[in-house]
Image (tube, rainbow, N blue to C red; front, side):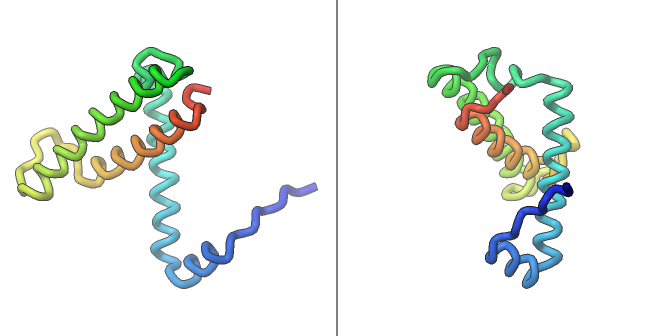
Length: 119
């Protein structure tokens, strides 16, 4: 028996009909970020962001989220330099890469707080 395709909510269907290019690009970017996430997890492993813990209790989760906060702050400071202050980029990380990192870290934080990290 073939697998059933999930039904789109009426709002998603409406938005995809009204803004087909935008919604298609949004999904494309999410897929690209998922691929980057998987590649980095393959290279670094989950304990890089969980600071060596298993994120099994509130203290370990908070430690991991603090590490993510530092990484997010680094990315925001980079954007400030590149966008707000129009400074030259000497480390060759694009604005696009920086925005991608910010959104992936945001998703990672949600996975951690939902108790699914490294599982």
